[in-house]
Image (cartoon, rainbow, N blue to C red; front, top):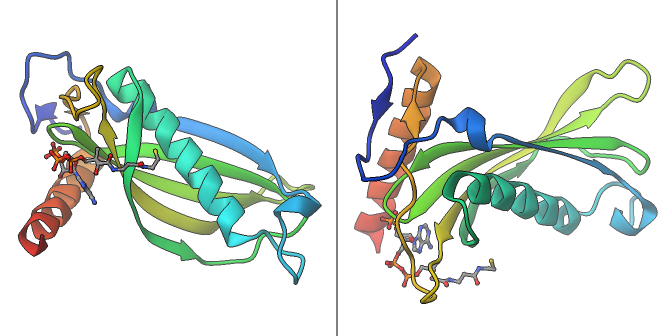
Amino acid sequence: MHPAIILYPRNMKAKPPSESFTEMTELVLPQHTNAVGTAFGGAIMSWIDICASIAAKRHCGRVSVTARIEAIEFKAPIKVGDVVRLTARLNAAFNTSMEIGIRVEREHAETGERALCADARATFVKIGDDGKPCSVPPLLLETEEDLRRAEEAEVRRRRRRQER
Ligand SMILES: CC(C)(COP(=O)(O)OP(=O)(O)OC[C@H]1O[C@@H](n2cnc3c(N)ncnc32)[C@H](O)[C@@H]1OP(=O)(O)O)[C@@H](O)C(=O)NCCC(=O)NCCS
């Protein structure tokens, strides 16, 4: 176990990723499918956005907006009738933004076995009463994995800011 680390110290109580971890279940219906009978990418993207927005809201305690969805990869098709499990987990909390990792898995109806079908990363920004970005609580990094994810997110954020 890694000693708890807070990368962005502020006057707010830090929360571990487990407090905002979000799990969502969907059933692929005919209206979610494309011309070849598999789940339409746009439907999956919508579920990704919803699942990540719930995790962001759980972490920061109020509404936040999607600033970016990146690195979406559809790795395997999902068929009509399949049960889909989405999970969203905070990778990092910065000043007013949060990076969230999302996984989409298909559940085998008989065995309950899960297979990764898609993943993505999203950045959400907390919005205050004045409509402007405002500070989010720090993320409490308790494990080696928490720390690795936060450091990787920090590298991506720094790179983005340099590119702007
Ligand atoms: C996201 C938004 C609030 C950012 O506002 P802004 O005036 O550019 O604010 P700032 O430049 O001060 O950036 C605020 C934070 O957002 C982050 N950010 C802004 N644009 C970003 C982007 N495209 N990708 C990743 N992060 C971004 C900044 O890095 C900053 O993070 P930090 O405070 O943790 O360092 C604004 O661009 C917006 O309202 N976009 C539309 C959102 C929307 O309609 N989404 C779809 C529906 S929910």
